[in-house]
Image (cartoon, rainbow, N blue to C red; front, side, top):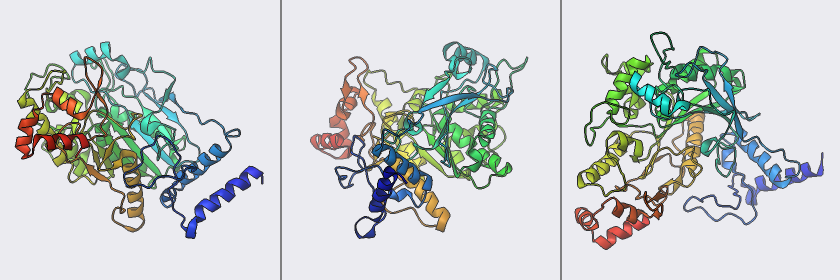
Length: 491
């Protein structure tokens, strides 16, 4: 055995034994990573080992050992490949809108039994006219002809532990969105149909191919997605689990992570005719889309509604109670895409009082729909999508970051599978901001003035939107100075 290996084993033995034989201490590397509130400062010279993960995920622990070895002996460490490589589907009959082959990007992690499949988002089209317009302006969302050979994963798809503390060593799969059907369609291109809509079939075909690339030995498959991809998770997670069971892989735990895909079928701020994707109320757009795409709607949800009302299943709070697989919901309380389809356009001009009340009410409505969702993360921010952003580790709700909440969720599922325990103490998974205004959470993403490009703090942002401090303080029964202090601190 070489000297390096002996040193490594001795170090691991010391770390694992620890003072008084405590074997589960969290060791963090110094750096810019945000510490959870209330967490003790890390030792000056330490490494990113987290022994809390050992019970629930030996893969993760061994990956951290590998990371430690590479930190200690960088000369002998082989560089990990960070790129995801494009694979076009072997089954050429499963296609993008224009008939070009669908596909996926893959970065394998040999030895890991965790797989993360990510569904890209990007709105939809629901008739010939707006699909033609989409093809002219956003062709990469309808065709694979110009897809690059590789992609770099970011956020939860990153292979850097600093950016992705708990999933960095998983097998990563990015499935580009090229079906324009919220991942629900099952119709092929033909003389009658100018476009194919095969989102649901693309997911099934990708899963089928991945089984031959190691997915067959997986322990956990996390189906994740953002925006239309987040809604796609809700529509497909149970179907993926059923597909794997039918193929004989009952041991794979299938879970969902839906980011910014939990939309409301609420009344628009200002009603407009259904002319294009942006102006059409989502209920009407989906109603038309289901027919145009020949959409597959999950049977358990479909049975809850009358014939012709299957569109209800595209709205998170209606489909969630029918799901069998566990799903973690990530949703901004003031989602920009929701405000867009509700015809609230924040153009840099101060909002009218009616708009301001509508925005506040939207946050309340969304918060109410999440109250019975077991695992959720809902910051009071004005934004859209988060899990593939490289700043996703910075956002916190009640002192807990999103990666930490997902790690707690992983552990709670492992514990409940093992012995039916309740969620772990000090490891929250139901995190919803209670403050009532956009960006009242101080960890929200930075907002910039549209005209000057300068960063705005929460008070500047609210003033910019026409927020009346005197009036709002009066409504809340507070002194204006106290209200401003609360806003500054994020309370």
